[in-house]
Image 1: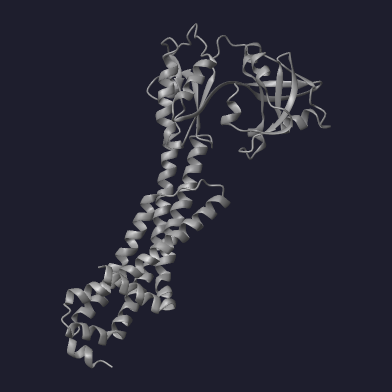
Image 2 (image 1 turned 90 degrees about the vertical axis):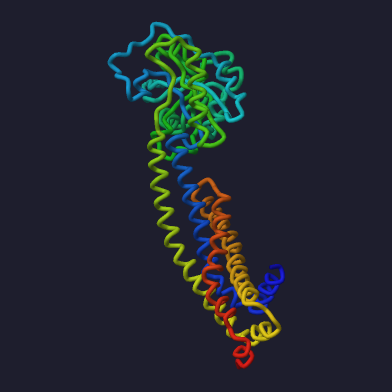
Length: 403
């Protein structure tokens, strides 16, 4: 086995250009399959994150009627509880102890009108806890973010999105100015942009420290939204279920509970579409592997013809058919395997560059690499068998006479 591999490598070195051109079809085919897998997997993961995980592996756990989260319950029969204890921030901070949870925070949000002089804008006003920007990062354009004293001291300060700020303060002089929400003054301390949001509408959200919600909201005991960030998208469902059970244990049983909107069906349909695209593209790339396999068979037939006398000499010295068969078969497998290795590295490089250029997460599966190498070796076996069998069947007398 080792001796045959050495002979195969020697034959490849002696005909470098011919061997490379023979391997080219397999290299391109394997590289295409690996690159397609990386790109489609990254695209699927990014879209799943956008649908299920808000683009950053996070999910919002809401307080609402059971019918909101369960399709089997009729909403008309539900009644809002007379009293629900507020989930304190310290309870949410304890969730960070779970290794699967990267961050956990809570916030309140309501569509309100922000006034400055005669100007006004309708906006989602979001009362946030300190870890909110760790999960949903924002870029500071002017001023500063909230600090510890803003949160602990219930300071009436506000962060405005860039488009709001420009609309309310076209001269750019809005820092330290007062705006009003529900008749309550808030000092503008900063201007922010959410870099993950591409359109203006989704940026229209102002922020105040969490404890200010009690003076802004007109509701009795409003429950916060809990945002949980996991290490990856696949952990979102099991972790959100654990957090939901944890939160629901903190409130009395009623027709209202904590739960999540079900985006899983959408994500699964998306994955099925991408899997079908993957199969189709791999099928196209496999044509290159077929061409490469034919190239291997062709070059091995040429090799058998060139080494006919060598085969005849070995047979005359007592070499069995199985030895000759193994020699040429291993040479074909070695040629295909080397092409597979080069193709894997090329495919990883192309997949990485394309994924990064398209802002997809780079996902590489060990199974795809191992499968590609096994497949390339199988090509060597399938397309190398005929030349190897032809070599093994040669008559030593005929072979020695060959010119």
